[in-house]
Structures are given as C-alpha cells and as structure tokens.
Length: 296
Image 1 (cartoon, rainbow, N blue to C red):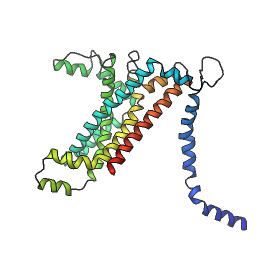
Image 2: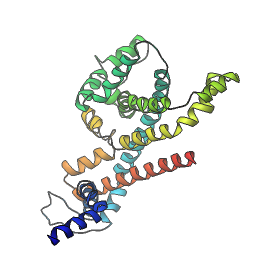
Image 3: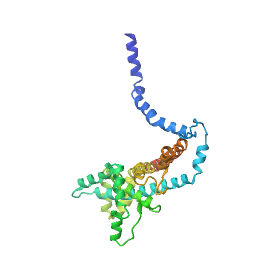
Image 4: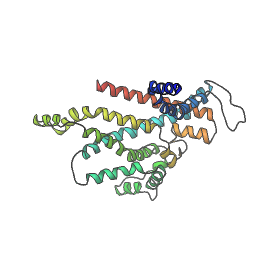
C-alpha cells in the first residue's frame, strides 16, 4: 500500500520530466544520433571496397575533400542554385500573394491549382520537365522558336543546366512561399491602409512603407524554410540530370550520394554531409538573427 502511494507521489512530482521524455528520446534517437554518427564517420577513412578495417584519420578526410576542385565547384553550384531559386521564388511568391489577397472570381480554384506542384512527386516532375527541355521536341524550345529565338540545350549544356534546374524548383516551390505570405497578409490590420489612403499615398508607397515592413517577419520565415530546403535539394537534380552533364549540376548532396553509393567512400561522404549540415545551420541562424533584429 505504501509502495503504491510512494510510486504515485513519485510520478506526480516528476510529471514535468515523464511527459516530455518520449519526445526527448525520439529526438535523440531519430535526429541527434544520425548527425553525431555522421560526424564520427567523417574522421575515418571507411571505404567499403578497400577491404581494410575502419581507422581514424582525424582531419585527413576533411583536408582531402576540401582540396578537391570538384568539391569547390559543387559548393559553388549549391550556392548559385539556392540563390537563384530562392530569390526569384521570393519575388514571385510575394507578387502572387498580393494578388490572391484581393477578392476576385475563381480565387479558391486558383489556390487549388497552386497546390498541384507541391503535391507532385519528384520523379513525375523530373520526367515532365525533361520532356519540356527536350532539345528537339520539347515545349521550351518550341516556344523559343515561336519568338524567333535560338534553341537552347537546357539540361544538356553545362552553361544552362543550373538555371534550368532552378526554373523547375521555382515552378514547384513558389506556391509555398505564396501561401505562407498570404497567411501573413491576411493577419494585417486594415487601419494603417485606410489612414495611408486618406493621406493620399499611392499603392507602391503603401506596399513599401506599410505592407512590406509589417509582413517582413513572415517573409523571412518563408525564406528560411526555402533556403534550408534548396540547399538540401537532391531528388529533382538526381531525377533530371544525375549531376550531369559531366559534373555540371553536381551539388554537395549529389556529390555525397556518389561518394557513398558509387565510390563507397563513406568517410569522405560524411565529410561532405557535415559541411553541408554546417552551411545549412549557419544560413538558418543568420536569417533567424535578421528576423529577430527586425522584430526589436
């Protein structure tokens, strides 16, 4: 009887620990452990094809990866792809959100159509856009010829493959930014707008001095989410080009995948993944800091 009472009192006293414990265990096992294990592997020379046992090489794997011209180029492609895609998505997403924030016929149907790119599978998107980009029968070159412009190789050329892949990303993820921005616009008060119109402010002045500052925290949240996701983009690039032609569209994610499952150099693949993780973390913290500074 006493033991049951003691057990009950113990549970009551430690409810603040017991209730969140499953969530803490889940985070440690499913999130923290993979990162720590990858970090551990980055200090080894584990190679599945060498037949040699795993051994610690400490910073040698980092030094070897960082000195590879292929890594430097992949890093540059990762940043150029992300910057191009996210910047255009932000502008287009904001414009579309401003349009959808007004009342017009078929507004609900327009929002439904916007969801289609988000729910499409990466493989289906890759197949469809590869058909669009086909140099002979593709829709994109057909449109260029109708405008009197020369045909492009699109994903078949090293000079156009990154912009071509960024265009697919823009098509797929601009609706997400629009929906996030639309929720932010819907929460704004009408009083500042009414006062500005009474004072004779133009629509551009209202947007620049009222709408944009008030919706900036929401905009930065959307940019954080898209930047993190764009830096980690793998499926669309792999489905459409596999990192080609040559290495022209090889980003850090594609490089890590090839190191792991084509060359079986697990130690160096872990190095690439840790560097990518640190880049994503640094970019996220930077944008979060900018968001907090705007809220002060």
